[in-house]
Length: 185
Image 1 (cartoon, one colour):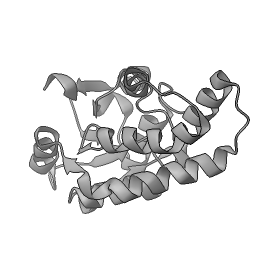
Image 2 (cartoon, helix red, strand yellow; image 1 turned 30 degrees about the horizontal axis):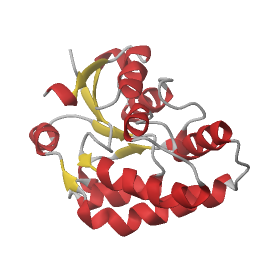
Image 3 (spheres, rainbow, N blue to C red; image 1 turned 180 degrees about the vertical axis):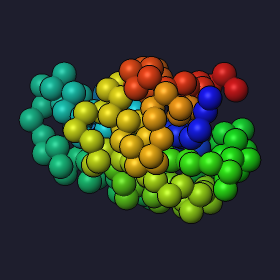
Image 4 (cartoon, rainbow, N blue to C red; image 1 turned 135 degrees about the vertical axis):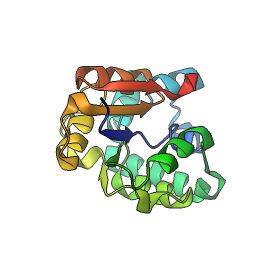
């Protein structure tokens, strides 16, 4: 039986993926790093610094990871006004609001996750927001979801995760949680 809901942010509660992809292209192109769109979506849920390290390594580029992470965040911030809620998922959260524990668990950086949740009007719905800074391992590791359950005070088996990526769904499975693939809602 589900006692708590845990939502991913990007691509689940908020339609951020087009803005994130454009921000990536803006930051990577000057360095000659290609990032095909299908690859971008396959890496959904992975923290920005991990993506930078992987792409730079593959391209044989020694670049300042922290600077690229910062530049990518700034590029996304300039596009945040384009972000809209994903209504079918927000409707689930709206229906549960005030009825049971809810959290957001994201591979994104806290500052960006909170700005995104504020942009779509749901930041104050979630007393618990777990981000990349809160765990050592990231999706597909279960850590972000397990930490959200811990902070909510709910057993992992009593949580249902709403997620939009294969990495995120694998993390929910590894956490022993039920999950909903929002791409199929």
